[in-house]
Amino acid sequence: MSRVVIADDQDLIRAGLRAIIEAEPDLLVVGEAANGREAARAAVEHRADVVLMDVQMPDHDGLAGVTAVRRARPEAAVVMLTMYDLDDYVLGALRAGARGFLLKTTPPGELTAAIRDAAAGRHVFAASVTSRLVTAYVGRTPPADRGRGAIDTLTQREGEVYRAMARGLSNAEIGADLHLSEATVKTYVTRVFAKLGVRDRVQAVILAFESGFVG
Image 1 (cartoon, rainbow, N blue to C red):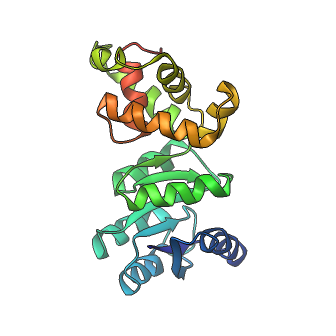
Image 2 (spheres, helix red, strand yellow; image 1 turned 135 degrees about the vertical axis):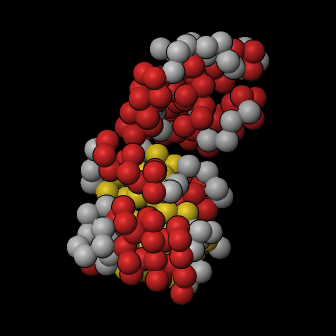
C-alpha cells in the first residue's frame, strides 16, 4: 500500500485527486496540505511514500515544498502536479529533488500509474516534459553510438514501441497507433527497458536520441 499526501491550495482539486487515488486498492491518501510547508509536516506525520505537490500555492509554494519534504522525509517521492509545464518550473522542481512532473490534465489511470512508479523509485514525467528534457539534453550532448548494440537486439515490434515512446507518446497512444492493447504495450515497454538496461522512460528516450535511433 502506497501512502500519498496531496498538496494543493484548492479544496476542490484535493477532493478530486483523493477520489481518483482512493479508487485504487493499493493507494491510500493519508494527508492533505494547502502549501509546501504543510506538505512536509504531513509527509512526516503520516509516513508518506509519495507527495503530489502543486507548484503555485500561497505562503510556501511547491518548489520550496519539494525542498522541505526532501529534508523532512527523504524517503518520500515528490511528484509535481500542475497546470503549467514551463521550463523554469520543471528544472526548478528537478533541482530541488522532485521525482517527476505531471500536468493536471493527466488522465486518472496515468496519474495512479505514475504514483506507483514514483513510489517504486522511478521518475515520472508528462510526455511534453519528457520531450523538452530530451531536447535540452541532446542540444548540449554530441551524438554518440552508445546503446546501438542493445537497440539492435530489439525485435521489430519492440523497436516500433520504442520509436513511439521516443516521440513522447503514452502507452495508450502507442496502443492506438500500433493497434495493441495498453497491457500489451506495457509488456513491450518492460522488455525494451530490460534489453536497453535503463530504469525509466526518460533514460530510454535520451538513449534513443544519443544513439541516433531517432533524431
